[in-house]
Amino acid sequence: MALDYTDRTDFDNAERGLVDRLEPCTITDATGRVVFDMEQYAFLEGDAPETVHPSLWRQAQLCAVHGLFEVADGIYQVRGLDISNMTIVEGDTGIVVIDPLISVETAAAALALYRRNRGDRPVTGLIYTHSHADHFGGAGGVLPDGAGDVPILAPAGFLEHAVSENVYAGTAMNRRASYMYAAILAASPTGQLSTGLGIATSTGTVSLLPPTVDITRTGQEEVVDGVRIVFQMTPGTEAPSEMNFHFPDRRALCMAENATHNLHNLLTLRGALVRDPRIWARYLDESIELFADSSDVVFASHHWPTWGQDEIVTYLSQQRDLYAYLHDQTLRLLNSGHTGAEIAEEIRLPAVLDDAWHTRGYYGSVSHNVKAIYQRYMGWFDGNPSSLWAHPPVEAATRYVDVIGGQEAVRAKAAEYAERGDLRFAAELLKHAVFADPQDAAAKEALAGVYERLGYGAENATWRGFYLSGARELRHGVTPPPIGDLGAGLAAGLSVDQLFDTLAIRVDGIKAARQPLVIDWSFTDTGDTVRTALSNGALIQTKNPTRAADVDLTLRLTKTQLLGILAGKGLDGVDQDGDAAALDRLLGVLTASDGAFAIVTP
Image (cartoon, rainbow, N blue to C red; front, side):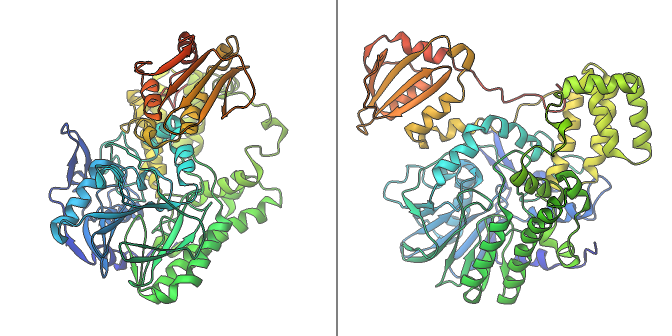
C-alpha cells in the first residue's frame, strides 16, 4: 500500500463550486431537538491522532466539507447536511430534487439553503435513485404538502424493496446500524468521526411519498419540467432497486450509489440482502459505454463529483475492476475449497486498486465483502460437518471457558495474546468469557479495552463503529438506537398488502396456533377485500377471496382507518359485522420488537 497523502485532488473537488454554507450547520426538529450537527466535527483539523487511522481521518475531513455546490450548469448539490447528498436540477419552471436525504428536517434545511441562493423555486419533480432510507426519508421536507401533481420517479420495485430492507427486518437492522454508524458515540477523535460514506446519519423524522412514475428499462427517457433524463437500470447492485441516469443537455451523469469514493458494501454490517458484485461491475462497464463520452462530470448520492472525461473513465473503470476482481478471485479460491474466512485472509488487491483513494475500504471492506460473496454463492455453511449443529453463543462459551480452565485462565490467556499484539484472538477469548459469565466485570473491561484498540486502528469506519460501540456497551450497558423505528415513518407509504405483512412477522406462532380466526377487510377506497386468517400459527392474507369461509369478523374501512387500527385507535367509525372481539384476539397474538437488544453480551 502506497497511499499518497500529498495528493489534494479529492480536497479540491470536494470544495469546487462552493456557493454557500449553512452557518452554523446545526439542524433541529420542531421541538428543538438536534437531528444533525456538523459543528461537532470542528476537531477534524491537522494530522490524525493516534486514536484514528490516518487514511480514515483523511476521509472524515473530506466528508466534513459541507454546503451548497454548483456541479454543472443548472445542477447543484447540498452536501454534508446528512450522510447522503441532495441534488437539485433546475428546470423550466422549478427544480427537480434527487434523493431528499434521511430526515424531513435535513431535507428542508438543504432546500432552504438552495433557495436562499437561487430563489424560491417550486419543486416540480422528485427522483429516488434507489430504495434505501437515506435517499427518500426526507421527501416530506421538500414536498411538505404531499406530492400533489409533482411526479415522483423511482426504479421499478422501489416500494417493495424499500419496505423489505427498512421495515420487515427494520428493528434488528436499526439496532445494528447504531453500531455501524457509531450513532451512540459522541463525535470525537476517540469516538464517532465518519461513516466513510458520509460524516453521520441524521436522526429526524423519516417519511415516504410513494413513486408515481416507474423507470423500467435502460434507455427510458423522461422529461421532467423541461429536463431531459436518460435512465440506466441497475437492479441488484448497491440496492435491489437502483438506477443511474444521464442529463444529456447538461453533460452530467448521476451514478446513484453505484460509484462513490470508497469500496462499498456487498453486505452491510447492519444487515441486508447480499449484493451481486458481478452484475455491479457489468453495470459500471455499461455506464462507461453509454455515457462517458457525453459527460463532463459524474456525481453520486454520496461524496464529491469527478470532472473531466479522462478522469471519469479512470474513476468508473477502477470502480468496475474493484468489484469484478473481488467477485472473480473469491470464486476462484472458493472453487479450490477455501472458506470465506480463509479467502478474506488470502486475497490481495492489485497495486493500482489498492493505492487509489476512491477504492479504499472506508465503508465496505475487502474482508467482509469477500465473506459476503462466499455467502451469496455458498450460504452460511462452510462445509465442515462440525458447523452443522454448533452450540449457540452462550452454550459454546461456557464449554470453551471450561476447557481453558475457567474465567481467570481465559482472561490471563487473552492478556498474553493482547500483549503480543494479537488483538483478534484476545477478543475471541474474551468474548467467550463474557458470554459464559456476563457478570465478570474484569472480562468485560478487558474485552472493551481490546475492542477500543481494534477500533482505533481500523481504516474502515463501520468496523471502527462496531468496535467502539461494543466497547461502550460493555462498559455502560445498552443504549437504544437514536433513530426511531423506521416503520412508523414509512407506514403511510406502504400498500395494504405490505401493512398486513408487517403484522404477519409479529405473530407469536405457538400462541396463535391455538386460536384460529378469519377476518375480512373490505376496503371502500380501493374496492378490494383482503381476508386474513390465522392458520396453524401463520397469518395468511388472501386478496379478493372467492371461496366461502367461516368469517369471524367483516370490517368495511379505508386504508387510513386500517392505519388507525394498527396505531391502536380501535374500530371507531369502522362499519363491522360479526364478532368484534376477533380483532382483539388477532392483536393479542402480536409481539412487540425490542429495538434495544444486547449485541456484545448475551
